[in-house]
Length: 415
Image 1 (cartoon, helix red, strand yellow):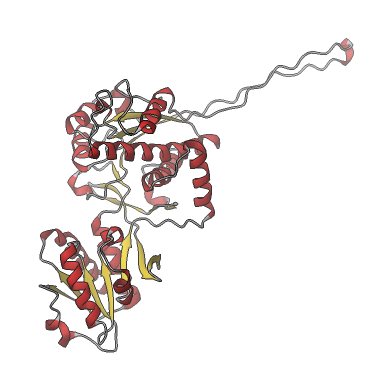
Image 2: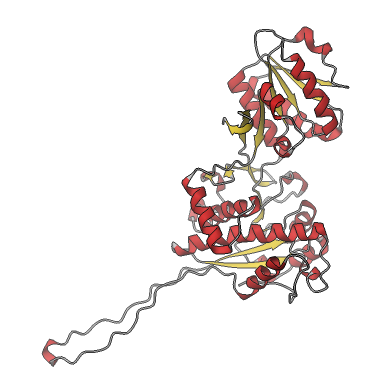
């Protein structure tokens, strides 16, 4: 069943969201549906020829796996129609993720599994999460999905402890900030993007030297530290990492260290628009005489201000936690089923929900390969791929990232 706190009234400017949340209340369980035999009318026959049929034996019902989902629906804003733009965005995200997750459970239920899906509103509020952590229906679940945002899941996790497995479904925040050995982090944190880039560079490009161009902002430290650690480990410290702070795109100080015949590998962990604009133009000029292969921050995939022609000339690579192939049969089937079920196009959140629902729904019925042995089962989904590793004190972390490269003015997967 769906557990929701408030009675709902129409939303301002988003009636479909109201209709959907109302539907959640009416029925969100995914029980296994079994056929029921229909009595057959008796025919008059001679006693000696009458065949006595044995009554149909109903097979035992599979015990339901209980999943509690905690999402920032913000239902307390429905009655006065007081959703802010940010609140409405979070509510839409929650509904989209739920729809994808529910569709996955429905497909598993049709194949014989049985689920009870309970939905709760975290209101994106730490105090609300604190209260939910004491809810006995949540504490006795087989899996808790959410809360979504790091501060809220940290508050929830501190109370619920290790009584239940908690899935962080959408946040790439480091599990070290939450510190729960039963936490499952589905989105790879930034440090694994750094390791993924380092491994590709070390294994495929085999450079003797790597140049890390920094803007000087402290938020780059997490990427740089983990990248350096990965290169040192993978190359056994045979590859030199040169980290420099670049001002106004001036790269002349590096020219004496560059090769005119071999690719010069550059890594830029920055996300600042002004810094990237001038530094990439300088690299593009440098590339005319010194061949460049560039690795950027995973956030670059979402930046519209980056010039595709420059990125392509610089042979730019980035890491990504997800990449959808719309030509795959599984993707086509999902799009068809989602449109049929909800009459809208799926968003990235819906696709993430479907992948996670399919993977963790299966794991709940996987016996010895269930939630306590996620490293035994990898998964390639439509949007996400999972390769979980157990980290002491931090729980299970998905470490899989893709390597993408700008080719023909679009990002294409190379590994």
